[in-house]
Length: 268
Image 1: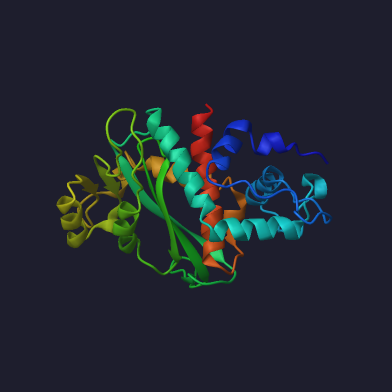
Image 2: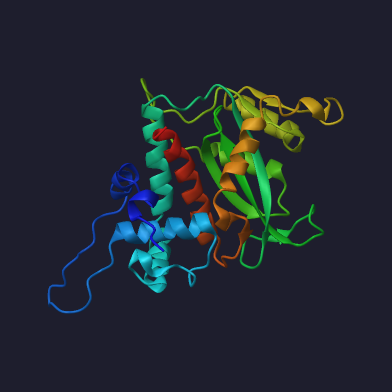
């Protein structure tokens, strides 16, 4: 079984990753000991775990470092918020190239089964079984601009303000950095007066479907892009079910999936 590291971590992605991770000491001053496993090999192994859905113990040895080393590197980078910084760097590259379309953004969420861990709750749509919800806000092309996780019993409306506030200031092709959408689309789960007032106070025009007034058949006319992004997240098989006990580790896999989605747009 051969899995080339360059295929999982191409040169463009590796160059962006090196901007957010400082190079580690390779040689021990006292001499002796084993050489430190390379960051590129460890990153390729982490991406393989994320995309294939295998457990850490099932990691094939073709990458070089043992699964314990890869997991420790993943935990350390998660504590250092490396994945969030990588995601933001990729968004900056997209913004600088004019690949982000702020004219019509959309917001939605998806619930998945959770085996254990914090930030879980009974899923009202899955017979009350424990679950975790992924919240995301995308641009007009479906590229994720902001992400978050919560228990499955958290109402979607409670995530709107944190998601909009969580959009980082992203570079533009010309002019200053930008972090506010020109218009925001949402379904009936966000139909609350206080959310409409809050969006107006920030100068964000909105198109939120109204309960009991608008038919459900036309709700996806402009909002289908965020549902497509949810299916893109499903390409990261590690997100099909949550096994991580620590919420920061699960959020790290969500950030990895979002960074890969955005990086794919850079290379197409």
